[in-house]
Image 1: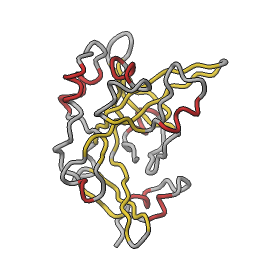
Image 2: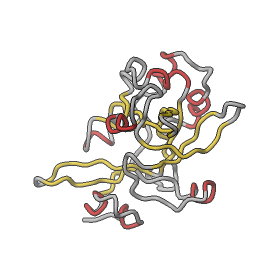
Image 3: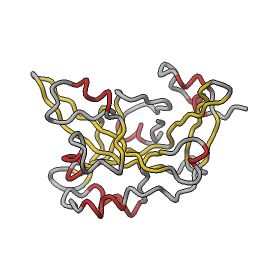
Length: 208
């Protein structure tokens, strides 16, 4: 995932170009006293009832079709939803026996993608972690060349209904997780981004 460059100013963070699961991502969620807030969340959701934080190894993504029923997600789906804004995300395709990465983004790269997510608060033996999952749905036409799944992308009009914890209608919420009609650009990028040690603008540069 590549997160919005402008987040650097709002959260005093450097721009990121290669964010792997189990690290921190910037997200938007509803504040308990009203309004929305920026927060940093560990990517890989840890339910409040989990015995240890290793649970997050399996919860980077949640499937839209089952998110309302799965024990790990159903509580957060009802009232602890978030948005992970990003300039783009990565997907891979096997070519000549190798995994070729692609950077998926809006045709105009300054247009943010709003990834639907869930967040949780977990505490155990004095340690507290706030974490999140990104919800995936069926791929749209642009993404099918690479994969049959993609992050659920919200429209600007969906932001408040998605974040509002009073909105607990599962049918309404599921409708927001439909495959996106947003146009997407698929840019072939260097395999160097397969390593999390590389986190710089070269990760998203187009290669032949």
